[in-house]
Figure 1 (cartoon, rainbow, N blue to C red):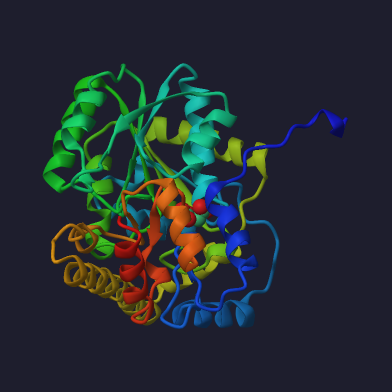
Figure 2: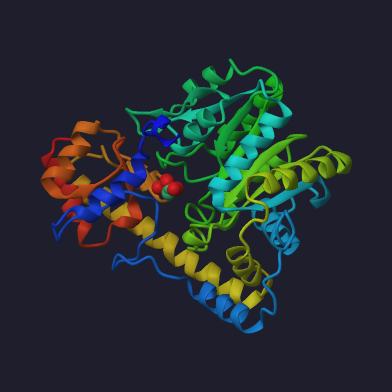
Length: 394
Ligand code: LMR
């Protein structure tokens, strides 16, 4: 049987981890996978997470199953964190999932159940696992322009022109904040225009929000998602706790489906639980319990928010330092976009050959499309990267 298998395409982000580990150079710089690192290169367990885990360890009296949708308390805190009061709770169906990827997968499966002929529209570029899962599920997909390689900002005219081709019932995948891989984001007023167009086309928005709190702050980063949730009868939201709680390996995420009324909500909720049952039965609980413990306790929540703010401000400072250093070296504002981008990533906008040159010559690892993980830098490596970019002639 197994001889019938053929090799699957390697994930271009995860491949980098192996390559980086195998590189013997001591001054190598990892700007690859989207994992936050502090100035010492460590991915810390957040203080509030440690404390929540201590409490769970001390108090938990059972490991019996939760529900197919996960713990309702987790859904409640996540609805509040992501959606605020943009939409009544009774209209939101929700299931805990293994990470944000699990939420995306379940959302796509739900789309397949509801509207198998729908095309899912993706930004070009987007997180490579989006098209990969869609292809794997045999669904239809199309791209809309997103990044302007000249300005390194959003190609808004291109985006609007491409979305003109959306058909009724198609699904449009949008990044809630901190666009991955580009770091370039729509303004709120641009998002208003996208919302109007989607309404006109009778399309269904699907928001992937994996970096809430990494861009402009917890509330501001949720604004786009809330704008969308309050503007449509139906929308899907996949949220990840991997990054903002730093619990990557705990696989903690949630899929929310906004329904038009409570009857539809109940139907969606039943379908989401069914999908969980088919794919992995009960979702993982530990990370969800950690998140719930933190968000329900005012002191823990305040500490988590404070540490998240330190993380966010640290990344903003690195962005500014890199933009300043490149300005000094090039005597131009060509790289000013690095300070304007938001979130963990920026797309440098150079060729795969240049990316490879930086890896070979300087031990600097970034994804082939020139996505850099800003959190992989520190005050010492910023000047090294800036010099390497300039010397490579980028
Ligand atoms: C990334 O984009 O690097 C992260 O979301 C990690 C991943 O799973 O690809």
